[in-house]
Length: 260
Image (cartoon, rainbow, N blue to C red; front, side, top):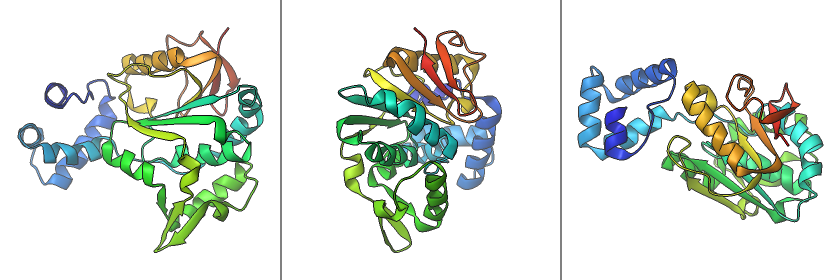
């Protein structure tokens, strides 16, 4: 990981050991290499192999309206505050292939906020960002997304938001007309905008404590006074150095608010 950082500036040095080992083993299988030394030799001398490895190290796992209670709480407790701002900025950190960014866009449109909201959806994986921009998801997955959307308090037929063809659903591009899908590393980059809501879900679980604190520091700096932070169902700020800098808004849904 040190060699990858020096060669390509992608910093995986503070990802958790178990997760990282599992993904490297998977990469060895997929690339049919015997050991880590062989992998390192290939990666450092062939950027195309590194691009393949990047897909394995950042396996995109996401779904639209994942954990519907999270989105329902955003709708009921966070949106009314966001509606008091003349303009809103939302940062979806570690957006993977974009499911959460598109989900938030739908929610914000239904709450009359989308037209004055700028969504920043960031990730380190360029292939994932390309998919995120496209907003095209398999129909097989959309059936599950529909159930999530309904449980998240959706107000229309979910099919209103996409066009189905060839076993895929292409979501209305106007949903993300104000979205920026951009490269950003929580391990090496800095804050780029003041935001009212940061949603970073199921990303911190792959980081060690030092990198978790770095990411939480970025979110804290990015958020405006009393801004909101949403994490994944298995993530918490309770044992971080930022535990006293956020108030808990909804513990079960892992939604926090920047302390006064």
